[in-house]
Length: 341
Image (cartoon, rainbow, N blue to C red):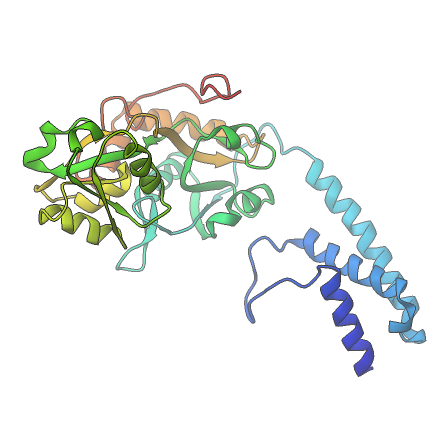
């Protein structure tokens, strides 16, 4: 038996069945279908390598493989069945969020779920008469968890990129935009009126957070036309402290990340937006889920009655730009309206 176990382990590894899992707990995304698939594949391997299976167990393994195969067919059929097109949501709506992405969603010093999007979700679900449950999910598993039915909403500062808009079946469908987001140039407050683009920073020091970030790529591209020095910092607090102290002349970072860092600080101000870096963002729902239409109506109502603006001000201690969809009722973003080919 020890030899058989070792051989079976080897087969499992070669077949790609071995998957890293923690010693305790359940990994989000390991649903019934995935478990059944693993059972079926491993049982099938054992039957094809008869020497590994003791004679008395072969009939049991055969039955197990058959049950798993039939169950997989049923699960697959259910997965292909579109969600209902009418009806009301249950009394609990689950939203998946990383809870590590301030200011969108994070855990505050009181160990409470907090953030701009969390506050929007709380208000929206309250208006719908349902209870919100936030499920902590790694960013890489948000869309798979959504489409597996683990959560009904994905929320983590999700941009409406062409790639996502083109794949409603594997990604989901976006709500109406809740905000627009891009890169901005910040300076000390007394210099903000003098800086409208990278051309105004020639000969200056411009800071970014880390190599390889979007801000870093934007600044590197800008250096091809405007000659200035790029200074790299390890984190946002260090970047904006250097700006406040005058050790650099400007900082480039995402707008919401910037607003979060400079909230309540009168010494630093956003001077300019970087053209071509802005995308609308919103929540994502499973394709065909009627909850999306209900949320869209509530989100537009929140914009109209000023609730969205109140949440924005409470988070960032400032007002959004006039053209930001935080307070404007705008149409849904489509492939055609976004210019995606």
